[in-house]
Length: 425
Image (cartoon, rainbow, N blue to C red; front, side):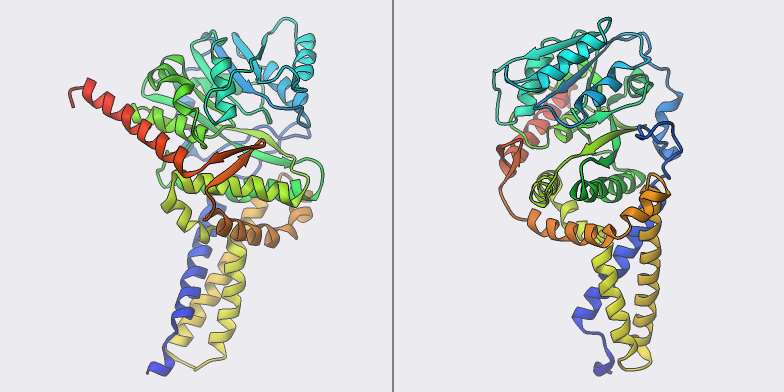
């Protein structure tokens, strides 16, 4: 009987293949199809009904909104992306665009925007003061002094939105139980082969993984694409100063708010972002930074990411099926071969469905289809690289991973302790 038993290696491969296939099926179901939209650049998409709890809330159409956008350099399409924040239906909003150097080329882009929209409240903040190790947060600290409204929206520089964006992301904040609103995003590669590969990282791995977690009930996220909260909430967590030395500032801002007992809402809006890394090394650096960031805030979740890269497991599953089918007949080998074969076939179909649902249109599906195995394999290698290393590089600055995470986690727990004390807990 022992001769007919599966080896430990075969059990590991079988378990991994089945797990990866199940995950691919969940991810394919969780992702919505790209809606047919006007214009060449998609800016919004629907999300599953489970994420639409905010739809029934009245919009904050009469509440002023201050949009903070930290800038660094004249990125491709910066002007076009910033324009979408000017073309808003919201009745009362302010744009604060901040740089940390008087020589930053983004200043010329902001001046051009101010000239094109003279009736809009667009303020340029040029401030060289540095607060902490996170230069983006340092910029936000300087910009926050100029924010005049009761609702604060933070959005990365490479984000573009639809005209109803501010109305939609502000609406859930009418509910006092909601602390922060965040958005997922659709990526478009700008400038060649590696940006296309990078867009698949977001559209076919990051976004589906968030949707699977959201469908499972998790709300422990916050994305730099959009973070909307009330000014009073930001003040309660200590302002942006609470984040000045942390790596995952977007995640930790939302985590601090959750420590107050307030909820996180994933908006029905999906904004758009550009992937511009022109070389393999630039893309590798950016994506391993993301993975090390995930490791810093959720080590257990990071450890199980290995099942979210289907192609290597599907290749292993196909090999295992052939090996088991050619081995001893009957018994556990037969059942294992059937399970492995069925799992591999289902996983392959689910991976193709995920690619289909993530494609902006039919041409994109076929154009990027050959990149799917490369994308999944590259992710697996980056996951291995992300498991090591104590620093990441962000806009030329080295930021520690573990130290910033532990410090910020302690501060978040400190917020909870203060709340419990004030409540008599």
